[in-house]
Amino acid sequence: MIEVNKIPNKGRGIIATQDIPQGTLIEVAPVGIFSINKIPNINETEIFKYYFVKPLEYGKSKNVTGYLVFGLASLCNHAENPNARVDWIEDKIGLWSHLIADKNINKSQEVTLFYTNIDEYADANKFV
Image (tube, rainbow, N blue to C red; front, side):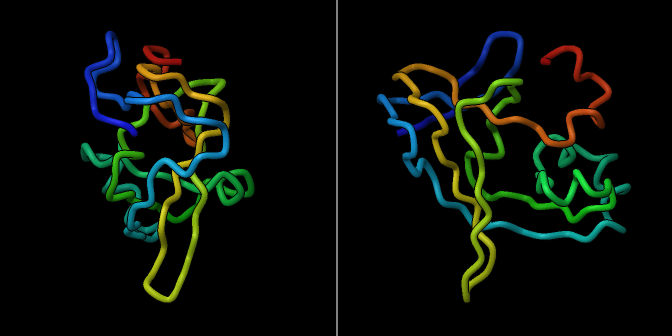
């Protein structure tokens, strides 16, 4: 349903390999969690570009937990008006990310997310 591809002026990104209707569960992936006290160190590494913060947590305080998705959702590029979202689902095995189409996504279209912590990216002006 999706694949990694090179996106002009962005680097890697996720492309739909078929039409994806709104509401479709695109991917389920396991999630690693790290605490707020690890974030300053992680922000100094390449991992900074790939971890998530939950919007509700970030809206209350920037002192949040980090979530590293072990799936293709971590390669979705930012968009101000994205066509997908991540829902966080916890079960007896652990935390999972569910990448869900928020809009109809056409074959060959990029799958995008809104980066909750976009204000922390020094080079955000290159892709916002």
